[in-house]
Length: 269
Image 1 (spheres, one colour):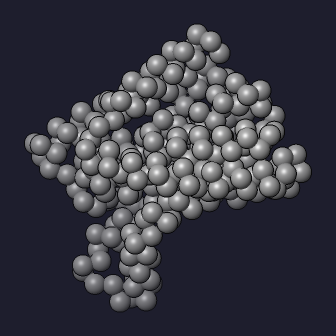
Image 2: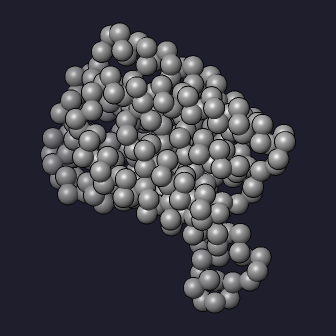
Image 3: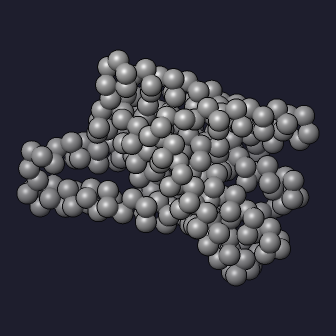
């Protein structure tokens, strides 16, 4: 694979990982168009690892605060004011466990999924974005929203995130949608969705790390680094844009974009 193609895949990963349009789905379509069907899954995971670094940098204050609360809990110095964030930490743990269980099964399916399946996933994501956008607005206007995520809601969001590991179903889009359906505040939904992705991506990397040597030999370490840098930089810009869009509650443009891409995919792929 040429450096240019790796660079383009890296940018595609960075943008599509955070915008609710499914990075894995777009990577699968791009590989189909570029004739790169033999690229191992570990390469995708490495690009995800780069966007994970972007998440950690963007949300470092929130992550550090959660780590401090967790440390106070371990040392039995946590106060009553730490309870909401302790619930959020438990929600992250439970959501990660559910995602991991589902991910073990979906990882076996991913290599065999056709481009048409990916297009179907795009349509599922579009429906989730439209429905959750409407419901989020209704909930905010009529009943109010929660600023913290309960453990039970964390289980539900983790379940949806597990399904979001399938190409075409956006992980960020589906988990943000799940947060909105669970009655969570828009800003909190965005933060929780991406912080929840940290252990999920790390887990995927651990599972696929055994193939790291083979992808380095087939593609070259330099190419992988170029792809990761492109994914990291483009991911930071996309993440900043998405967090603004979440607060404004505007997802319909992404939904209609996915519908168009899905229809074109069904016709031409």
